[in-house]
Image (cartoon, rainbow, N blue to C red; front, side, top):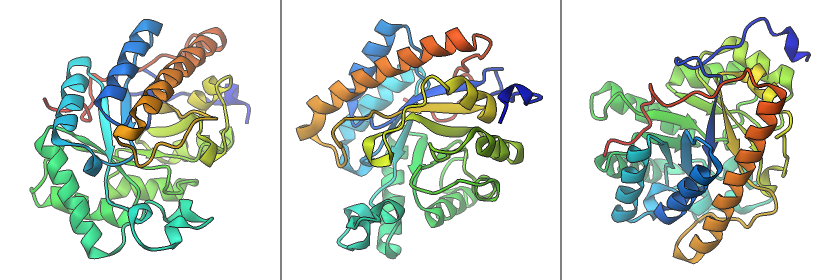
Length: 292
């Protein structure tokens, strides 16, 4: 697709075209290192996400992350757990595990996921990463019943294959506030989705090796034109797997977070060189910033 032919580029409410997310920030020490490095590099961070699940964080760790995010006006999305990838079922541990890894197995895991969100809400978290459509339905029902507040950002994970307009439109109708679309979509395919839905889209500009190890930094301006309002995400190729994270992975996770911050800075340099008219959006209207 010739992106110059796009008649108009949609924006976030503040007029910005894109936001920046760094995923897999697995605890307060990693978060602190990322914030420090982005400030050193002059990069504004909109959102972090955490992939191991809030269930694996201490209460004190959640509180520390909430305090830092609130003070810096950064969104947090915690992955809801547990999930099939942590369970005893074999499907999520086979060669085709990507499709089943984030699914919820049975009512016991539904109940555990509800408890996981209950706990995080108690500490002020207002953004959650979801990898199961049934779970999104259950969560929206709890909001409709007044059990949970309305100001929660439900972010659909890249584990859900949202690769076409009807699928993303369905997720929007189910209550998703943003949706991860596959990192390997063409510009035309991204624009097809954008024409049909209103919610912001999220896409990996660089993916981890398990997701293909692709790097689309130089074409990020075209991705933004095709999908805006678009949150660009930065995984990291040639990096160690972090999930499930813990104290044994913190040092490695800090190094990876610093490397991701530098990738963001490189991408920003290319964006300013190739498309200086594209503007970053800031979090003035965000509901995913924690309530400290």
